[in-house]
Length: 395
Image (cartoon, rainbow, N blue to C red; front, side, top):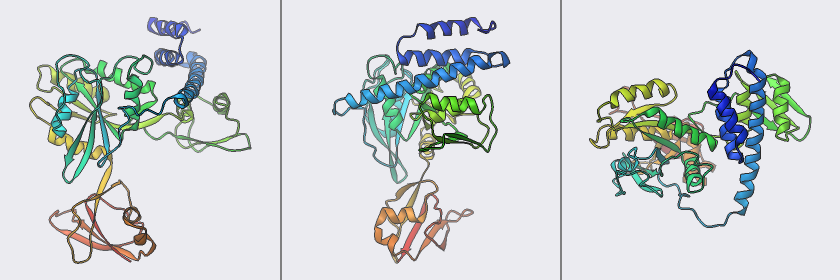
């Protein structure tokens, strides 16, 4: 046991030792790991703690799978069918202004009150952005230990997992850091990460051959045995592990966590009209500006809302493509596709005959220097499309 643990780390270790449920053990162990100083003298301790965390996460996955199988088939009000060009959830601490923001973006009439936890169930609205609609969902407030306590916490987290992207609404009239820490901590408890970079490790299970570790990148704080031990703890005895970049033991643990997902998110800093909010905005930006885009607004004074709608569209990472028949105007209703979509994706959306009999397509695109002009050219089936492209098929 290292002798240089801080009182906070010792207290966190005690909370972990006293935790009874799997969820509480995972939560308190994460807190303990975060508080252990990182140096040569704590390498073995951190390795063993992270190994224990990986085991606990595996046990929790299996437990939740059993619970899910035993649930009734009744439909939860938090299971919301996606509509429009994408589904965005608005999350935040209580009284951050989520209902007011939903109303400002969509015009939907929602209950707005000054007391905490006004919203009990999801509130829905459709935001019009130019010629498309985007589904906006206000979720009830994030609260402490929502993945452990009874109530609708897990349903809220499930709705967040199901969304396409997230707006994190922060009230900058009060301490913004405690709000962000609460939100990130609760999402982490449900294996939801925000704006997470691609993992530098890929694990492919195989039927035989044992565990093969291939290093194309650099490994930090681990060796081959550490990686093999982690896989064996997960009852994986045959696999190919490819390290493609600078990789830590945490990255390997994340790659083993089949429930871990990453969501695109931006921070919306509300109540910018209140005295002292400017100072809190810069505190928020210094702490999280390298990880999140932060957009200041005032719902009360209707400032920043129009600009926010554009950022919401960008957050979805989609493009709009319009089809055209010879001699006719382009369709006013776009086909919405993910960025980097190609001509083939449009053909598949329209009809099999466009794909089966494809010869070429004519593409009309706004000129990059003069938006009033259109350029046109002949393209093939694998040509990458951009937002607002117009396409005409020839078969």
